[in-house]
Amino acid sequence: MDVTSYQTTPTTLAQKSASQWRKKMPYILSFGMLAITTLPIILMYLWLLVSSFSEQMKYGFIPVKFTLENWQFLWSDVKFGGSTLPSIWTATWNSFLFSGSLTVLEVLIGVMAGYALARIEFPGRQTLMKTTLLLHAFPSVALLIAVFYILNFLGLYDSLWGVVLVKTALQIPMTAWIIKGFFDEVPWDVEWAGMIDGCSRFKVWYTIVLPLIKPGIAAVSIFSFLSGWSEFLLIYSFILSDSNVTLSSYLQKLISDPNMVHYGLLSAVSLFYMVPVLIFFIFTQNSLMQVSAGGGKRV
Image (tube, rainbow, N blue to C red):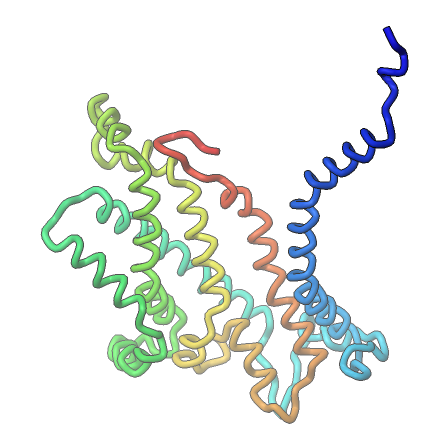
């Protein structure tokens, strides 16, 4: 046997190298585009971090002097614009209370409504689904006056619970539609098998069907929490007292006077505002990665 037949020629090496580059090119392009799109966002957050620890930013982006004064809102009251800002911890607790209550109510009602729309046949079902989706298209600002009269009549004006009910009502249609899509992916045979084995309709729904749509419930929960955490319009319109202020309206107080904006303090509060959401997403991202396929298989 000719030994030279095992030797690799320069032409063969070049062909292998070109083939490897062709295989890697889609990944290189994908990561390149990802880097280009995320770089401005990373720079923005980096600027916030640097600005929060600086007395001022020379030319808008060069830190001048390191300081912790911008973070004094964590341990003492902050006087800004001739008045004292509400306690940041009160605002944080109100934000958690608002977002958590909204998430619980929205998921609980949305899951039941989504199951009813997906499984129960009743007169006007299609009309109801289309109407609820149409109502969701109305902007919240168009309903402010009507909502004000309702909350005032119920004695819930300037109440965090009143805003929770309003926000829940506005988001239930879309939540029910999303959950309905997950219920539609679960075959009827799964429920029939459970009922044949002696389970009630409720037990089948609770013990068999709900575990199969956990990714959908997780997704709706995350989006609901984020929506509540970032809600500003309703809280700004219907909350007056500092005892009910949330972090979104706390930020608004820092930019209410454009001639007195403290960018260092604003950057520090903005970072503080983002940390709970970041932690929440880190602990819930695995649930979003699960995709329900069919009746029970997950890929």
